[in-house]
Length: 153
Image 1: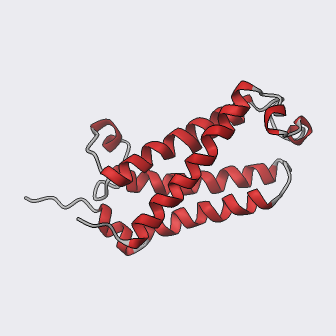
Image 2 (image 1 turned 30 degrees about the vertical axis):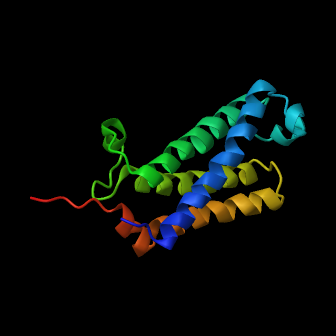
């Protein structure tokens, strides 16, 4: 079955998210000082972190690997039992639900940076919009139709 335009846009948005997060998170993990990315440590002064290791792990795993897995699921729609168990929306494929989670987590991630006064720049705005777009495109009727699970009795 061919996917809708909204599903292809959602797939692209999730791709954009993980392609940016994986190398950034990895850089923070291997150089927690932020020097590898040119991010000064003083940005963390009002946060609970003394370096970028924990934020880097979060970025790499939660906003990088998790969206990469979701991207695969959105394209192939594989049946993976342990992932299906993590999906509370049983009428939809697990990748649909995970894309919704990614949007929410991304918006919360950016807002937490703003709460800790890590600064505001064009990337914060871009990724806030990205998170909102992921949520919106996940919930468009045409996208939901593409990932609805039809069961026969």
